[in-house]
Image (cartoon, rainbow, N blue to C red):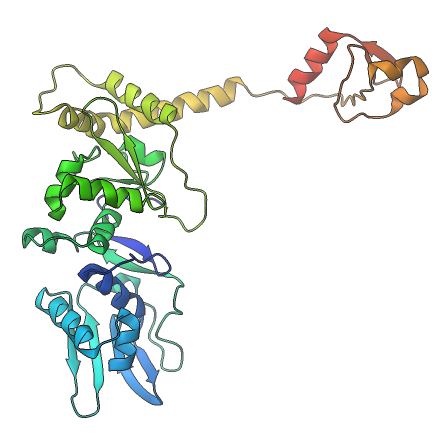
Length: 355
């Protein structure tokens, strides 16, 4: 499935939440345990009415969700998230009943209302929908990001198979804005309120999730999201593929592009020419498939190879040696049933047909 930059939300699997402490890391845990549809939730023998994006329970359950031990710390986190506008929550001091509501919940991803069925997803299964701009609130307030905040910030800026970024056809890639395909550590450090060394350390610690590829010169770096898909089909693209695609983009670009840095200049090339490069490469591959297509044969001829040293015995030559040729002499059976000694030129022809 495509993940275009114009989409307003992005999926985040419940078994791939950001590790570590941080406000948005806690927000992701709360969202992952919230109800995905309207219905009745059971907690400690009590049934509570809930709506999509809501959770109803007690302090003990909340501490378990947040992964903290103290009640005061759990309420402090809830207060901070509420002040920033991420959640609304209420606590009944008498019966200790607590409910919270995710304010950024994506209603398009809700299930149908059900009175008897489950309203909470099984822990670690499925995914939640996260608004792409959820981290912008921290940037506007000049808050220093935690590692969990930075992790979710990168995830929310993932794009895949977007014609505005040719590299997104190799692997899900991180992109900030139209001209933000190639990123610098200084840019991310300024956004997160970190020093450059801390940014490098973050990518070193999270290399299994966010793969960093340094481009030549002062072009910056490509950041790939290697954990976007649940299976293992996402791997770090090779240097050859990345440089080949970069060369095609630069060839398709017009001369005289003005920018304040080489990185911004190449970012404009990527934004303006990725669509053309991807379409040209697709047309080229289609043409190659047509030209390399082999016509169907009317006669089916089976070839049986035997080792050259066995040819003098004759009878052993009728057995298939499974393509292993130890000598220059072998035999094959033609359509009449005769066994014919074959030289290197016949073997080459048969090899081409099999390939």
